[in-house]
Image 1 (cartoon, rainbow, N blue to C red):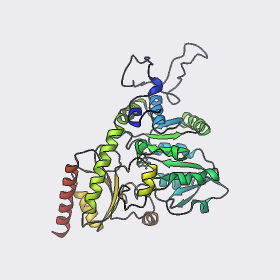
Image 2 (cartoon, protein in one colour):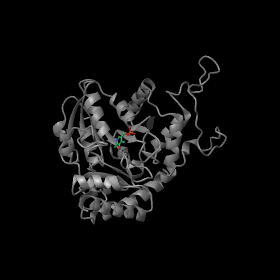
Image 3 (cartoon, rainbow, N blue to C red):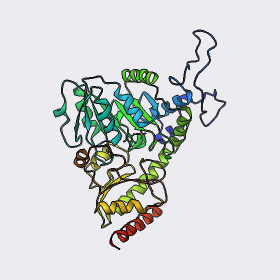
Image 4 (tube, rainbow, N blue to C red):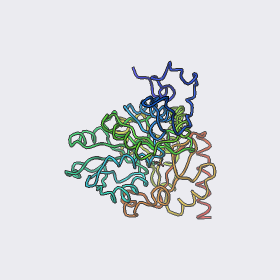
Length: 388
Ligand SMILES: *Cc1c(COP(=O)(O)O)cnc(C)c1O
């Protein structure tokens, strides 16, 4: 029987009984660039830290077990992970991508991958028929679920039946739920992408990214690519993410509990015109989420009555930080149209429903009453600023 996920955040079963690190309970930071050999042809298995580093490897093993994969790569950021993943493709290849994605992924596809000869069709994966977009050059489908920032939910298993039938890769960015709540490989995905900067790290203090797979052929290509392109996560940063992961379970549970309370609070506000949280039964993806995930996460997108009201909220927050990023212990509020999704062309933003009235909350682990009290005073101050 596999151990529970909260236990797997703390203990790597395969290394138990191995006392080569003096029994250190916290995995050591191997801050070294290179490794000495006792003679020609006699390697410890470690030659150079771009290829292998014990601290990074330990982290990769932990993330592998959390996502039920067979291999994981730790990269220097989420975007480094996406960029490395794109090296699987060659000029002429075609990818189908969800229309609503993290802005940085859209920027990479549009400005770098297209220049390299890769073609994209962007579609609404939770509503449209993917098969209509498949052509003879199609190699993969790339999605997030729930999406950043509009929280659209795609049925991973249903989509994987289509990708398998057409021999396409299914790539799922699982950043918003983390492996604690959702495991796309179990649902038929081939590759899972993470911004480890977010829930996995969890403390708004380190950038990291992951690629996880359960396919030996893809793992082999990834290992060649990380060795060749060199975006592997540094030893100290690997250690910080390892430390963050230890509390993934309790952080996710607490942040989600707070998020449910705040989503309900927002629904009661006259100035709020829409609350998009997949844990609300009114959400488009509620039933699918119940089936494919173990939780709803801690991300809430909401619309307010005017652009001016959205700006006034951002001017008035104090404890809640007006900042990009998500998934940390501190609650952050983001303005997608000028921050995370600023480089997404306006017509795409509008089609996806991201307007100047859209705000995104990453709910942290503060006492929930302090969060609702702060929001209450922020909303009152915003009314005051605008209408006196
Ligand atoms: C933040 C984010 C990324 C990019 O990760 P970085 O660590 O910031 O490079 C990718 N996908 C999603 C869904 C994200 O939220």
